[in-house]
Image (tube, helix red, strand yellow):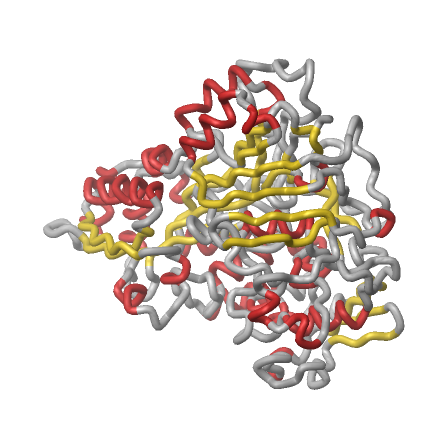
Length: 591
């Protein structure tokens, strides 16, 4: 899923690697490690604990009350609050942690690692022998914000909604539910199919508190998919009508929506009907969360580093590269480094740029570090040059290099490759789009143009007013039809190649912005699901390597990490390794 629709997409519960290397409560230890050379924690995937029960263990020293303000520089926030359609990484991290529950969820382990644990289900689900059927027993003590119980029927209806690809065109159900759930090919969904009770789909059944989902193919990762909001409940009837529900969903987590102004502000207040005993991983320490989207990075940096009243109970989700050393010297544990399994790519149009040498030339002509700096990122910290598509720490990942060497900016090598492909006399034409109302995107585009032109390309940059994802993923968009170079950023929904390679490279996948289409690769992806479970991770790693070496249809540019800044009255400053976000579930205000 891309990280944010302004820069890259992603949705759902994003399983990333180990959490920040600097965590803990502020106070006398605030200045410990100041000025130290910081490193990210080791990459790795979390464990599972199917037996964890609520209430969540208390955070040491936690106090109740107060308001936390969260600044999200250059992040527009969610396009929708409907859990079935939500795909914004910043927005999903907030909503999943605080508002909308699902079958399973992630807790933060003792070492900061993500641990898959139950949420509305009493455990992590029970599969049959070949993983073509999963049963989840729904707990009986979860409630909606109006005090009514969250039922197994509500969960089944939420799952059914995920199949309505016309009502929810951006939802993760388009990628996963329709691919795995039995009968999905013949069912249009409750709204498009005019089936408000989901009577026309028998892929999900309810028996008491048990919800059983049938699959068309083995789906051993269903317990991970269960941690995405799309696998949560929805109230039946007009209460969850899509247009209405997109603005104001019914909460079943510790907070409910008081006010939402898209691209500007989201205010969450306590949900008094939430029962902590029903939830193994969430807390309700803070009275009010105020999330401020699309903030100016320089202004946020000044607030957070000033030490003034506005900073003390505030959190910032990013930091300018120009202020990194100052923050590193001054903030100690309040500057948190958070690893991620998100990968950023550029995607030559496979239908138009047909010579692999031209695609490789683009890789060498792409000025990665200059582009990162223009975006305010810190090379080697928040952006690390990628080799494989699968990021470090993902099971099966192979640390290989294209042509046996790291990709670096090398315009001379790019020109050599273009000459070999027969394009020595005239620059090779590239047409791409950028978000002209995003100052960072404009600055990045300037660097990209300079770099590509030095590497033997001519660049036509088309400005669009808004998210480039809305252009890249719309086949009927007139600007999109002109492009031969796009991009995509992806944060896999769970820690496996199955949540990374098919969404980006399978024929017809919504975020296959390269329009890569090779039947042999599609067949190989389908075949991996039939392998024994203990062989699948390595098979995804081998496929990653084969695709890049044989076709090079997509250029891995960077593995994306994050810096979070916490005010000195924010308790438990830490990252959420399952969402690549601040650890909203466990934050509190020091009283």
